[in-house]
Amino acid sequence: MAFTAQDVKNLREMTGVGMMDCKKALTASDGDMDKAVEWLREKGLAAAQKKAGRIAAEGMAYADVYDGVGVVVEVNAETDFVAKNDLFVDFTKTVASVVAKENPADLEALMACKYPGSELTIEQMQQEKVLVIGENIKIRRFARYDTGLNIPYVHMGGRIGVIVNMEVSAGLEGKAEVIELGKDIAMQIAAMNPSFRDKSDVDDATMAKEKEILTIQAKEDPKNAGKPENILEKMVMGRISKYYEENCLLQQAFVKGDKISVEKHVAEVAKAVGGEIKVLSFTRFEKGEGIEKKQDDFAAEIASMVK
Image (tube, rainbow, N blue to C red):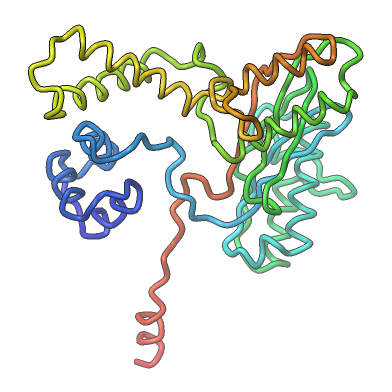
């Protein structure tokens, strides 16, 4: 698989590694971007990359709770200007309310739902908004939680939307300390972008790949030359603990605390309010996550217009 100068540039932006090393990685990986990132990590040149990919598209991620049902949605638009348009914002929030009320099985089912206050479906109303606003608009994804205590958080006016789903003892649902805990955890998720809820949720394939990469790193480090296999294995296991602390919500350092994990902070709040609190799940949407935005060549466009 061939690769271009743009591929080298994209890999550099993704990893922060120099251009020559990125070119070597793509050459060694036959142009495969994912394999190139893995190659750079094995050489100790790049940190672990989130699955999300580059943030490029515009739009809005929105989270809210409707009669106890937690919802987070992402709706995309072409420009940031339109994403701040009142018509677009109202459309996004209305779509979220429909998800809460109608419980669609998937995007196709959601698009067939009636748009509130209209005889149109969601899909038809989306088309109407495209005509009125003048840009392509697309409902991309949603998540819904209809049990437990749900806490929403919207960061920077719609750049990130988060729903935290918790199980709490009866009578604690409206307690100020519990609500504050939920909001703090939602902000933690927005800021730290954990890939998993708990270390026990990390799947075998992910962990096997991580161990493989860390083992190669340890063996290729000149400082470890001559060290026996059992020592290298202990080093790898220590780095696995670091992986959990970086990628698993409950093992992450609590951003508002002092050297305490999220898990321990939750336990402390539960003890203080006299009940049980469990973080069951969460969903974090960042607008444009994994979508490559079209890069317009304005010079070429102007040149074509004056021919």
